[in-house]
Image (cartoon, rainbow, N blue to C red; front, side, top):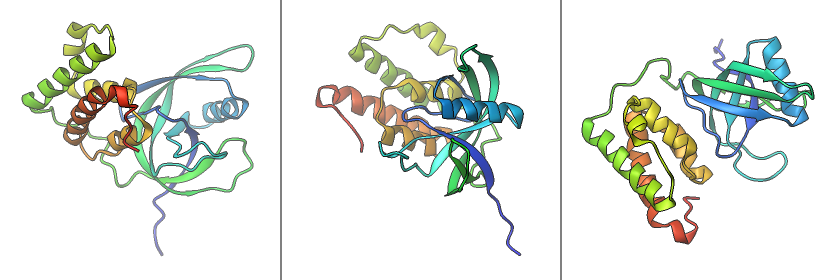
Length: 208
């Protein structure tokens, strides 16, 4: 008998919102269906899976890979809204969408293809330097004020993932960063994207 590797996941489809293993993602939950999802997660295992939509349809089609998050902090408001902080646990591959009666969508996801429990090895110094250089150029081109001294103190994984989270890339670029097999591959892609979007700022650049 074949062994099923999938697990049931409640999903929050949100374009541009990336969650990586060991990273944090603050979210303001106000839509009734996602308030119900948070309430359900708090009553069970405190897990929510983030995944990007492919389009603006209702319901939207989904990308194949997302990331499971654990609700690390939660603040409830009197009107039913939540402010939560998700901590990334593991990426997953979407196997199929489940037929459910809940207002929020649920899928079967498989984490077996991702070695996300182990912290990555540090980046080569030349790769780290390239990331910081491209980030500075990108920030200068956009007029962003950045505390570079604090940035330089971040460990490699935190630096790469934080830039990937906040950079105003299109969903396709964000998804490529999420799906990168290793931190080295993600860092190389990130440096390329920072340069690409900086050079094409006036052309409404997109990788889609």
